[in-house]
Image (cartoon, rainbow, N blue to C red; front, side, top):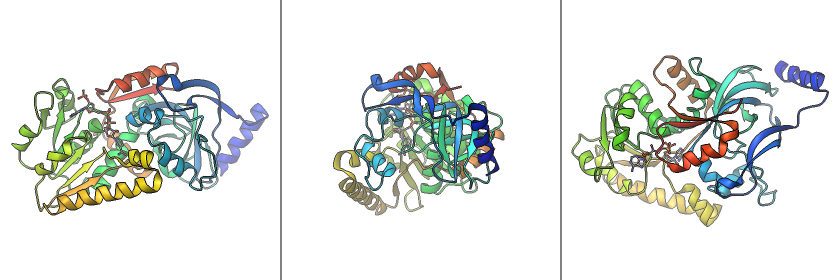
Length: 375
Ligand code: NDP
């Protein structure tokens, strides 16, 4: 509370009135890269709930979902999350600010914020239904943020939170893994060279697992350098063949999707609690196409049918999802400061180059993360 009042006073005393606008990249409609618009007049975020903080963004990280959301991906379910009673008209999400990772400094705390204070350096993964980090400031709940690792610059820190909290949700909450039960477990990561893969390899290796990764041939040394024990090239023929010749796995994390589901579950050790967790799910597409109620019914029916089909063969089929979590980031921050996990920044863009950053993301073939230096 001290911090909130202090800030209020300072803002009033130095400027005589509260700041109401800020620079940001926004979209006013869904579409291609041409819908990205830079403005100096985006609304300054306000603290609506007492557990919220305003963060001055130093660096922002991009994820495939930003490219998807620019084109309208998830629009109906995200609108419902923003406005559950549907009080606002369609299109009220605009101007929409993208950018799911933030590293920056707290400049204002709500009255109930206890564990953080003004000027703390923090990092966070921003839920897709909230305004993003391609702006000078962002407002988040205190339970979504965490103290940034000391070893990393803001630019490096912005490469981690979204893929880290997604990996944590998929591997720990859905997959049942932890630092205490991973030793010698055989894990397969389908798609090891992108944002999620480069993070998940490092976390699982730090926990003592044996990690096999699929990626294209030119990424082999890149993923080996992050700790992968065994690498299978998917570009030189059907990857399921060499994979089926290996000892079976305790868990598969699928970052690729599509056809992989047809064969991946046969690579698991049956009747041992082994799980296949895929991050490539039709959840948001279903709600976009069918509307919320039908989309959710369709989704529930699909996952239940698939889970049951595999359960009778002794393996578990699960969908993994991003989940915001300050506490998970606290643990990851410790691992980073202990030298167990490093940031894998493929390319950094300046704030004025945001459309170039999106172009790069759209080309695919990520080798780690794309970051935007905001200030
Ligand atoms: P990236 O774009 O950072 O990485 C994807 C990587 O996969 C690239 O390195 C690409 O390189 C590689 N790749 C492409 N095709 C194959 C293949 N057939 N086999 C092996 N590797 C392949 O994406 P992220 O890591 O950030 O995300 C991965 C997936 O997870 C995305 O589909 C994303 O939408 C999804 N996701 C879902 C979430 C959820 O809540 N459900 C949350 C976060 C991510 P190359 O093409 O050169 O091989």
